Image 1 (cartoon, rainbow, N blue to C red):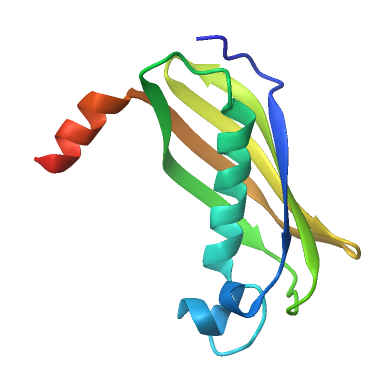
Image 2 (cartoon, rainbow, N blue to C red):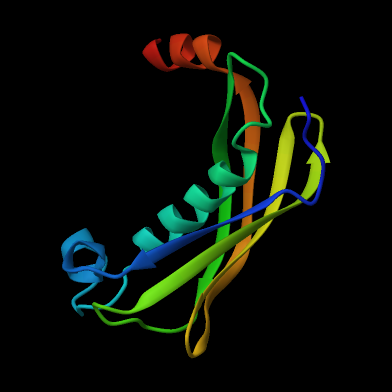
Length: 126
């Protein structure tokens, strides 16, 4: 693996009706839903790893700690950024933020682990 702290990536999202708490079943208001924020930061962590994992391996999320601090209406553009802070064997620790034009929307940590893809899928199949 060529994984070293410092890898990073960003992902931009323009909030749609499908991204809202109402659509995701996580609330009753038409604003960016927390489950979508989690998916967005996880996407950024995956993009940070693009081209850096050995063939036949992938990474899977194992922990998300996220504070969702500010609401965003449909049509708002948000940018998620993930930064690889620590590599401990197969375990990867990222710091993540989501921002909009007004400032911070969410911040937290995501942990992933590198796995052999075939063995992981075999385990999932039982």
